[in-house]
Length: 165
Image (cartoon, rainbow, N blue to C red; front, top):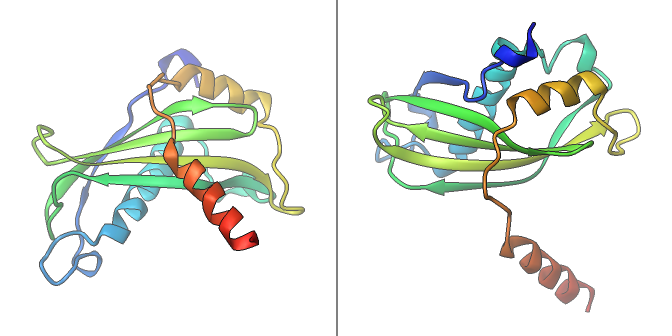
């Protein structure tokens, strides 16, 4: 696998399934993140050769630390949509992945997600450093974007302080 040829913007088409929709036939808000995470898992395996459920990641893997979805237009039952994912930031023990859901024509953005993932030792539950080969992949596919989780962290601090008081 040549690192210089890795896809920075992997995408796949998926169909919005009936069980994932609300009574109005729209994709349930809570299911958007599932579609984004499933697409990214498939993209990582298909484009980077990393089987997140294979032997290599039996004792370490990524867990979602924080996520956010912006719903812009409804995805409807039985629609075919495109999901693009990309790595917009990374460190020795974390990843920030952005997902974009588009309509079948790829002209309208339906939703955007951001998922902050932490690399964890599954045996002791502690964060761990990415191996060098993973860092090389991240460097190769990284696409810089101007996104930061903002006020959410400040709000969490307020909630925690209020609970401790």
